[in-house]
Length: 433
Image (cartoon, rainbow, N blue to C red; front, side, top):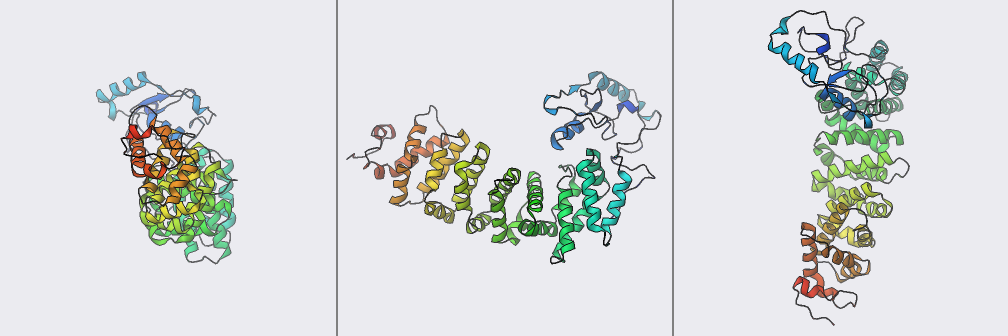
């Protein structure tokens, strides 16, 4: 691994090839000529895509140049039309070859030399690896945002990944395990986006993913949170879960479900739900593993107390599971599945109602037993479905409800609570008792 130096003037942002143009035409973040300059409340002008990435992708609440704290939710990004016209005029007049004073150095952290020194020690096989990782972690946690960018630009991701994959060959070594946990804690705090293609490729290597899976199953609660957070970020950049689906067994899914059930660290639980959705959407084979790991039971028992967003994600997972026969069987055998889904329909959101109808439609389309149809009536499913029919307009959800009644209304008519007016509404040929 090569750590990048520049004679006490470390390079954190690469500028375009030696092209001289006025300093005030440069974006302070990328040091490149601005195309769409915008000004923020501190009075500093940036390239729009760079400052938006700083605020919304990296989720920073400071001005990169002044490090002044900002309320990003209230921050107004104002186009700098005057500067944009000046830049365009300068380009059109062929001034790109005019020589100006040398540009100021890119933004760097005040701890750059210390970061390089620590990365060098960590990259070597020394007994001080864990203590150096702890020092680097401390810098990241108490330092400014530039330290995190500094670590990334100095090759730190490669060093940290190298530490993490060591547990594949030294998985019984306590020092290697501790080093891996510290490396995960640092890596989880380094901002990464789609533009960091090289760094993301390092995280997506099969050996790195396999190491993540080991830590998810055997690491401390903090290490598991860091790991599932990294998996979540990988999912955001369209990571293909083939290696996870192919190589990981039931224990991997059990670990994810344990984190989903964590009521203390809600952030970890939320990340685990997103990861499960990404994996289950990628492959039906993964759904079978999740079912075997007890996903249906876990998800149904979490549903009653879930808030709106968590409820929608849990129901989406149940829907994915019910798209295979084993999942539908596990759902109806649980005993409280239909009750839990019915309770959320029309009580949470239109999304939850739509997913709930899809789940019931999947169950009703697979030759359900009389017991299942009876539970749908007893637990209020039929009542909710009738209410959906009274909502104005047409939709796929409403069409599914009509299909459910056409399939099973004959079984429900023997109960006095079944609404007789549905016969004419649905065009059913039913003899009521």
